[in-house]
Image 1 (tube, rainbow, N blue to C red):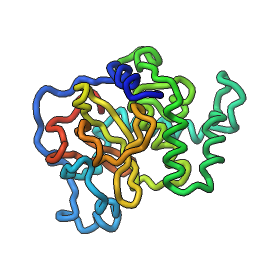
Image 2 (tube, rainbow, N blue to C red):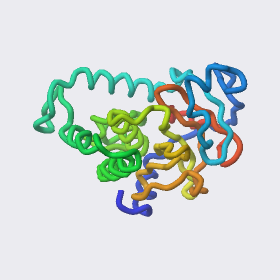
Image 3 (cartoon, helix red, strand yellow):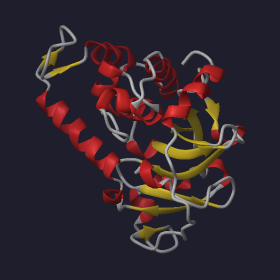
Amino acid sequence: MGSRMWGRLLIAVCAIAAWTGGIAVPSFAARTPATDSSYEEDYSYAKFEPLFGSREVYSQSTWRFKQWTDMLARNDAESRDSQHVCTSLNDTHCVPAEWQALLDQLRDLDLRQKVALVNDAMNRHPYVPTMQNWHQSMYWETAFEFLRYGGQCQDYAIAKYLLLRAAGVPANQMRMVVLRDTAINLDHAVLAVYIDGKPQLLDNLRDDIVSASSVSEYHPYYSINEKGWWYHFGGQAMTRVAGNYR
């Protein structure tokens, strides 16, 4: 994804239809510092700057996001099943050689250096529509699947998230963000990494890493990591959740 213009053309096939109706702030399992005294203890990243100037409501109920939870389960199974570093594309029960090489490079880097290396390495992979790879309209790839086959916008974000996690970056410093790109009126997904408490965006549509506060065309629906998910409202947030993007 060398140029932003080329990326924006490709993102057309990454667009996902959203629900047509608006929804209220979710009432299920919502936790905030005001309603749960353990929030700050367990989720210190609640103090981080909200994404895109929005207000955020937190929930642990990630089971509602089947694409995300299924991907995490497959990722865990792949990791447990990996017995050696792959020697070819046809090798099985193995860790992709690129993954291992990147982990070796990332080991002694600071957070900013890790983020830059991971963003650059994953953005070099080809954009491939889900239908072409998996013959279905929606499938969220594990990092190993993405390295082997390429993928769509959410797959770039997932691969970056999982690689940074494997390199020691805590889950509480990262979220995948599902959002609306109003410049092209399509849905999109990026990875937000909090550096010094400020969210920085790792985006397959651009080579550089920028602050979320500097991007006016991105309007979040929700964000998610291993611990839970956040509903966004106010600020630049959208007022409905991308239904098929779960």
